[in-house]
Image (cartoon, rainbow over all chains, first blue to last red):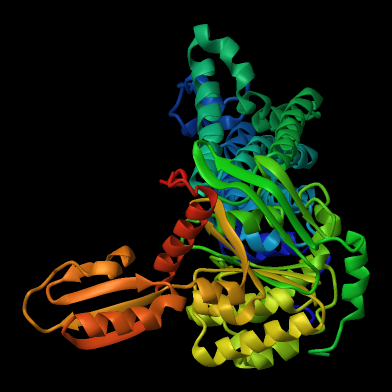
Length: 277
Length: 333
C-alpha cells in the first residue's frame, strides 16, 4: 500500500471529489470572476442608470434580484442579489449538483464500476452518505466562494457597505447553501433509482430551470401567483435578505426540509434496487 | 504463504457449520419478462474450484451477481458461508473476492490508486498486493499510470490483484482469463491452484471449456438461464463429443452414410462432418474408412456449443426416455 494516495477514512468522498477536481476548480474560478464582476458593476454604475432615468424595471425582474417583496434590481441589494440569483449562478450550482449527483449512484451503475465498490463491506447507506457528503461539500465550497467574493466587495466599497450589511451577505450565502441542498436531495433520489447519468443531470436541470421559471411566471402574471409556493426560488430570496437583513427561518426550514425529504427518499430507494444491470 | 492451508479460511468455514460454502436453492432472477436464471440449484463445498460454464447469455453473470449481493433473487435462496449476500452484506463482503466479468475501472485513477481505493473500501490489510502485482507482471511504472491507458489484459491483471489481495476465503471470478496473454494465464492457473491448496473456495464462470477443464473439479453447465447438468470435469471430458471430418474423393457428394447417419452428418460438397460420442470414435472411423472412399480425415474435440448441445440432448434423453424432447427454455432477447 502506498499511503497518501487515497483517503482511507472517507474513500468514496475522496473518489467523488478527486475525479471532478478540475471541474470544481473551474467552477470556483468562474464563480469568483462572476461575483467580482457583479461587485464591480454595483460599485461603479449608479443603480438609477441601469434601466434609464425615471424608468422602473418590470416586477418579474425581482426574480433576478432574488426578491419576493420590494427589492428592485435597480438597487444595491437587488443588484448584489442578482449576483446570487443570476442564471449563470444557477448554472454553476446545477453543474455541480448534476455532476456529483449523477456520480453518487447512477453513473457507477451505468459504467459498471458499482460492481467493484459494492462487493466490498460497504453498505448502500454508506455509499450514499459519502457521496451526499461530497456533493454537499462541493456546493458549500461554491457558495462560500460566491459569498466571500461578495463580502469582500461590500467590505471594500463604502457605498455598498452603507446599503448592505455584511451579516446579510453571509446570511444570503447560507440561504444559497440551503437552496443547493434543496435541489441536492431530489437529485440524489433520482440518482439512487436510475441507471443513467443523463437522467440525473436532466433532473437537476429540470428542478433548477423549471423552479426558476415557475417563480418568474408567478411574479409576472398574477393568476399564477399561487404557483410560486411550488418553486424553491420563492423561498430563496437573497435580495430580500440583503435589503432587509434578518434571517428567513421559514425559507431555511422549507429548503432544508425538501432536501432532507429527497435524501430520505434516496436512501429508501437505494436499499430496494438492483445495483447491476 | 502460497500453497499452505490458511488458518483464516478454517475460521471462516466454521460459519457454515461444515455445510457447503456456497448454496443456491431454486435461484431465480427475472428482469421483467426476461429470464436471467431459472431455478438454479448448486452447492459448492469448501476448498473446491467450481466452474459455471455456459455460452454468453446463459445466466452465469446473473448468478455470480446474486452471489455477491449486487442483485436480489426474484425467487429462491442464496447462501455464502451460511449468510445471505444481501441481508448480511456487511458480514459477508470481507470474506469475498470478486472479479466482475466486464471489469470497469475509473480511468483517471492510476493502477496503484485503484488498488488502494479498493483496499480502503475493503477495510482490511492487503498482504498479497505486492506479491500478486509482481507475479502478474504489473510493474511499479505500470501502477503509476492512469488505468485509462491500460490495455485490456493489464486491466484484467489489476482486477485479479484486487480480487485476491486481501486473501478472501471465497473467490468469485467471472470470465477471469479474458484478455490475459498465455504467459499470464499460466500464472493465473498457478494462483488458482494455490488458492485451492490453501483451502479457499473458488467459483469461476467461463465460456472457455479447456480453461474450466484445467482449473475446476466440478462444473455446472447452464444454458438459457437453466441448469443443464452438474458434472465432474472427468465426466465432462468423457461426455464431450468429437468432431469427425471426412473428405470423400469420388465426386458423388452427399449420400446416405448408413449407421453413421445417427450422428447427424452435415454435408458441404464432398466434405462431411459428424459429431461422434468419444467412446464410439474408433469404431466409427474404422467403419467409415471401410465403407467410403475417404481421402482425408480429421478428429478433434467438438466446440463448446456443440458440447452443450450434445450434453443437452443426453440430459433430454435421460429425462424423457419416451422420446419427448425437453421443452426449449425461454430465449433471452
